[in-house]
Image (cartoon, rainbow, N blue to C red; front, top):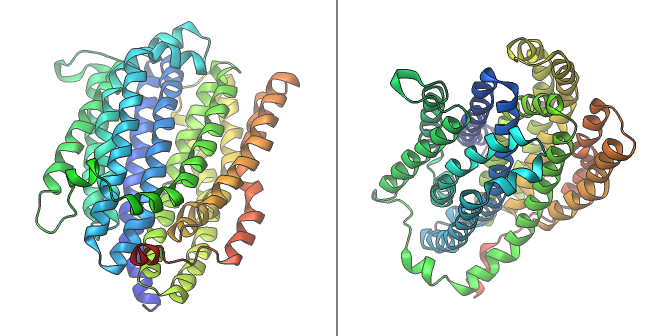
Length: 450
């Protein structure tokens, strides 16, 4: 594959995946911003309640990364049956995890909200939101895994269409149900949750129709009930570190929300808007990382290790340039963000400087997302991310955040600066790991030997 073909294939993957991630981020933004128009307390409550979904998404992220790790390589090898066996293994786990989150948010939502805030008003709003959104977990456990399979089997554009259409429906229903348009009841925060639930129903229905088409990777009940044991062992050998990495990373970010949640509603509201902007602009990072992982994984599965090494280098250079450009873009749009954000004067001042800090954060986000979650995992080098995030977050930024916030009583912006250093601190170690090329590995060889 020459440079022209590489760019063509990369764009064919990156653009739909980026758009898909962007739409998901827009949905999160619309949830917060639309209820934020009604009041800052609603904005803060929805933001904190969404942390439960954030934690759930960590499990899904680990499972989809593990799925991509094997599906991309087996697709490069041309083994569709192996992909169906992997799908059965993953669905067995994702449906169990989904059931646990459903039970927790349906029956103990108030207890979950108290983890993030002591404010009784925020707790009431968040409890209503969580109870309604609980049903979405049961559906996402199936739809998100199959959409991942589609990305890795030549259907990235179709996966994007399904996911983005559901996201668009979510945004429309947000407006209708939050504000009570067209005769619908005015549900406010609960309306955002109901909109999410209805859009997930539509997404799952479309996925189930899609997998019935000829030539698609199928969900085989026998592979769910009776998984391939050697493949299952191999899958979890590489996926457990990814799960550990996602939980360590996500747990750290959840602790950031806990820290900010105890610094007052102004800090919570400003942090909510900053995270929305950060996630929107980081959508391209997800596209480069996920798309790059598929390309590298295809080449590794086909046994073309040198070509995979070459493409890894190209992806890293693209990530650095994209990270710098994204940081500059974030600074450029900051005045507009401040203009449209309906915040108190104190929260607005917080947000102004938080966006400045998010700009340099983008460089680390793009590089680390492309390497750790993309290139490294494409070749099964999944333990590094777990160790890297464990040390960076839990030995540095989380303890430092708690100390500066609650022991030293430092200003809100200084605390925010500390907890946004994680991606920058990791960069030297990530670069050294990349240069060792331990990620150049064909994972399908072991299964052939068995």
